[in-house]
Length: 435
Image (cartoon, rainbow, N blue to C red):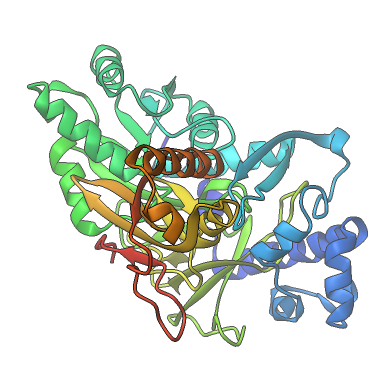
């Protein structure tokens, strides 16, 4: 196995890639028009028919899809294949607790795993490697995606999932893991735990790590590389488009190559929707051109980044995207989980003894995200007993955990103590230095 999983695709000349993308886009638009009434209605409202799309130069004519569309069409409104043809769902939390559910045919899974295989090979993986997957499994896409990619490459795969760090390190040492796949914050925690146990990089066989699902800085990359003695690679993806493997880093580490045979990327002005020229900073938009069950056309990711076609020393011709430089909406990524302030608000609005006035405080301590929600008490509750206040904190904490799948520290504060604003309330204080 060489430097590429699929050299023909990964190093394809630009004109050939455009031809392939155009053919697949035309077929995909027809597939969606015929099978997804929700999207056909959006096209009709914009005055577009499949006949208007003759290649990728016509992509801008199609309507956008947003997270709001996914919520409105939940659960089956964007499904483009009969349920009998679908073999899997994956899911992530939505803006108000209604989850995003993505469907997969067997072919969709094969393509997704193929994309993850490309990422593993780009990080130096071969069938002689031992790949330890510590992303969460279940509905979260991280574990299943990298697990399948590792199988495709032929690695010995350790489906560890997250947590139980001592066991992670024991297996890493006993089985000689060479590639680690997890969130960057958990990789840093594993490295710190390894050192606390009296070990260092020379005591393990790791050579590379593939880390994603949350924002991380170059400083964090260098810290992980120091702690574990590895080269740390970035990977990007969205549940809506399949999961990790939409793009991946090569050894040059100057951006992530997008798998353009499956995903067409655009950068738009987040305010006007206008397509921006290459090299512009704007909102990333993806069109899935091979997905059968859940094909999203012009899906607005809300991630802000830059696309570049500068020649890459790795030999790949696939366009590169920078690390996301922020969001055009108010979503946070905490411990790999999508968190919207509106989700917090929806929990608080159901409670009679807590005010819906709140603030989310996020920080990163020892490479691990901290997540605190400060909530104002009502005047009546403020004069109540400490035991009653603790009960409210516990109830809010449980409801937040039930909605998001991660725990937050709940701190009840005095009435009217959270600053008011004449404009948009500052709901989020993010102290992490992510850019």
